[in-house]
Image 1: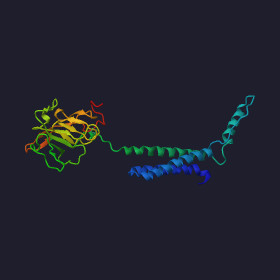
Image 2: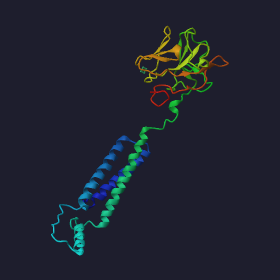
Image 3: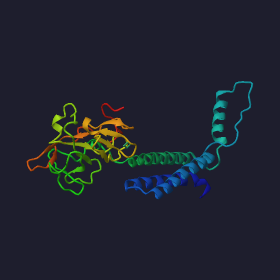
Image 4: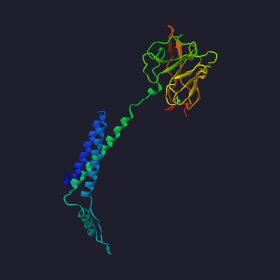
Length: 283
Ligand code: FES
């Protein structure tokens, strides 16, 4: 690198590396190349600032002898002019200095823009997706292998994992369909119409940390989450009775269609799973 052109070349490298970062981010990103370009961008910036300072800023100490008498205006003006020029290295005209300053500004601007792009790494805006599942009004509940569930498929105390028809891979939709003991079941306030012919449906996703609530003790009417042992009372709106979960399993309103299949009456009326996002009543 030619000594006198070192700042220009260094800032030029920073600008090229910054532009490369912009192109790379726009094309989808590549961690190894991004790291390499960041190295060149920051190294160029550092080298440019150091060599530019050495070349264009006054070097060494500047001292002025204290004078007992005030100087004339002309003497002061001449001294100021001398000071401006005296300690600058030779061969650094004003035009060249301005060019280097512009390149420095350009390098910082390009890098500043490139720094904004990693925000994309936060992923797409989930918007309402976290609040909805694939259940809609009238969709049949099916088993994991896609078979529609009929009104008389379950005996009292039996449970099956159900999904909305056509969405058996939907991670937010697994639902426990349970035939409850009618003598012990207490429908939650306002939810008398949410059950259908002795069947009740609750989200299978634990409200503590999203494990699958997979164990059902029909004798006690309790659902057990195997991860941290939270239990939920099927006969009492799936409210937690033990363990770290503090929120009941969301209930899905269901009905029986004219062909005798279990269908949803709509989506869950609250987000399923843990309270990772704000919802009324969450602590
Ligand atoms: S995930 Fe269910 S108790 Fe922790």
